[in-house]
Amino acid sequence: MTMSQGSVLPAAAPAPARQAAGADFWFYFSRNRGAVLGLVVFCALTLVAIFAPLIAPFSPNEQFRDAVLLPPSWQMGGRAEFLLGTDPIGRDLLSRLIHGTRYSLMIGLVVSALSFTGGVVIGVVAGYCRGWVDTTVMRIMDVILAFPSLLLALVLVAVLGPGLVNAMIAIAIVSQPHFVRLARAAVIAEKDKDYVIGARVAGAGHFYLMFRTILPNCLSPLIVQATLSFSSGILDAAALGFLGMGAQAPTPEWGTMLAEAREFILRAWWVVTLPGLAILVTVLSINLVGDGLRDALDPKLKRS
Amino acid sequence: MTILRRFVVLVPTFIGVTIAAFLFIRLLPGDPILMMSGERALTAEQHAELARKLGFDQPLVMQYLNYLTGVLRGDFGTSISTREPVLTIFFRLFPATLELAVCALSIAVLLGVPFGIIAAVKKGSFWDQSIMGTALVGYSMPIFWWGLLLIVVFSGMLGWTPVSGRLSAIYYFPQITGFMVIDAALSGQEGALASALSHLILPSLVLGTIPLAVIARQTRSAMLEVLGEDYVRTARAKGLGGFRVIAVHALRNALIPVITTVGLQLGVLLGGAILTETIFSWPGIGKWLVDSVSRRDYPVIQGALLIISMLVMAVNLIVDLLYRLANPRLR
Image (cartoon, rainbow over all chains, first blue to last red; front, top):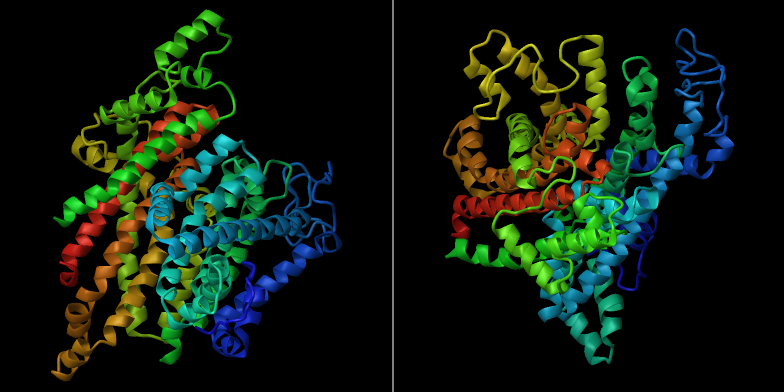
């Protein structure tokens, strides 16, 4: 394990994880060119999201009635002020895409933070306590895993009502069992090691043992899983938006934008191509980072 | 013995899944009696009559036991919109989804395994990097967008494939197997098979994309692990040719974890079918579910959810047993 023992509970985002792992980690991570590229793209997207109102040329919901379905500016019929063209009701596509970055990154962050926190707490407690607590928890997780995740998310949204917040809750519930399983397995592997027994003999309470002594040494697989749930959260939320069950119009969420533009697919390639490309680039960059994290945090690969 | 134990372990999960499906209707905001019956504006007497008929006047535990007995007898509820039993509709639509899933998974395995092997054997080369880069793009793909793109290119620009459905309306023949491609071939009508195939190809490609990427990645890492083993080195030292070592000695062992990966793609495929079938108007389970959600046909959602989860559990069990069969160390 490369984690230092005194590290505090990190959030699901990769940034604090890097701090905890230190220079050794960065050495292995930076050898993976794809991962570095992914990180650069991801940082750029984060900046776009933060400064969206400053970068975007127009408000995402401003309609230009004289500029409906204009092609990108380099195509015939395009206008210079609408760089990537306009959508069926005359909104600037570039501005909507820029603002959409905010939604997607927020969705990924909320989903991975919720499922990380919930899953890790449940998994650590189950692995630490064992017995009936463990059995009950794992059976419930088996039940959740018996449903295909997008199907379960869709049904949960049908119960909770369509909308972005409910979609995020549903996706977090669906991705939580993976954290529970990983955390539980890691805790079971760690809990009988000498340093844990030492801490217990020194008088550490159950709570301290679980979350301060054992958890920091189980973080590697959980961080990798967090990046995976970050990207799959964005994909699933976009899918729900596409099915009309996620963010609702006129929110400039990329999946919802695709759903709105679907009927114009054969007439105006840009309204369909560009939001999907934005989803792909974002998810790909996060998955590249995830691959790099996995390789850099995996002690088995490091020795070779 | 192992088979029996695996079955016993599934029992609590099965009960949990039925409880989840049972509670689903009751967790919805609103009157469950109106939702289950699909009726509106009932008089108080009619309402009480319906509540008695549907068993809502009994204690919750009795309601659950009644539900469970019904499920075990094959009663998964009745659709509000068509008044048909959910199981009947499921069996009518399932062949379409199965045909799509089988075709998608075949594409994924037939392309994913060889690409994974090439990437592993030529580790670090241009081929490895290109294949793994493409696989990661496939793995990150929003497939609903991917489907739309393929429609734009192959249906819109090139005009090669139809946009939706399973068959051109000009053909008609009896459904014997439920698989359109087989039925079209059996019908002997000229052009029917080509029509069925041209409808099938794009949706299968779309649905197979993510499993293809996952299988290629998994095959590569399994092959890499095996290629470093002693027995592979021994085979090489014996003077066996490179192809024979890879195809006979390494691949046989590398495929064991790949079997599990392939099996676990079923959940991915059923989830992906929701999106793929919606894009291509494919009349299968996925589209049925999306339509039922927007129609608020809650008995269908409840029943289909349960059937699908039972299906996933059954396939996972079979995969697990196959894995044990293929791996002598676990026998």
